[in-house]
Image 1 (tube, rainbow, N blue to C red):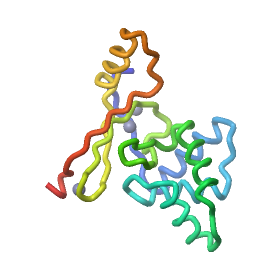
Image 2: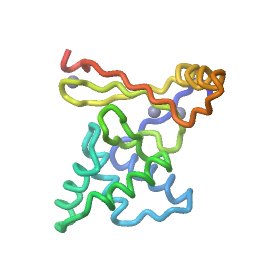
Image 3: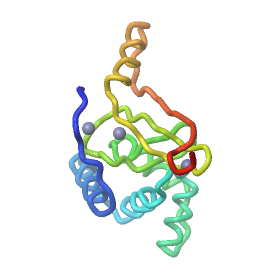
Image 4: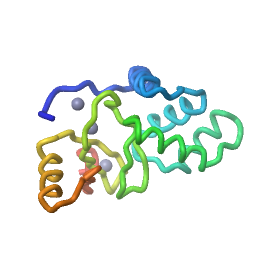
Length: 152
Ligand SMILES: [Zn+2]
Ligand SMILES: [Zn+2]
Ligand SMILES: [Zn+2]
């Protein structure tokens, strides 16, 4: 996959793109899944399943178990609606649900703000290096910790 311009969605447009992607995959966009996605997208930085369960519990006015949120996040990751940020043990909404990339995350150690880059030539190089070592890479994880522009 070469470098290209793709659209990064926000707000209502992000919710719509996520819904389209999930239903295209034959999955239902249920009220609970929508609530989890809205909470995830609303954080603006990596959120754990517990953070999201708290947020959904508040909006729904009833206790939502972290376990059921975790299952939905799992579905979101497998459907390209969310990404797991391994070094933060948390999730972010994927701003390009219709477009598949090995996103490179930049995580601020001071404020937690996370942005990302899509550079398939970089991640492709990692996949290639793995392949030439006889390793089938399903998901290269490249995360950069440091200070964001606001904190620096
Ligand atoms: Zn793209
Ligand atoms: Zn990306
Ligand atoms: Zn920062």
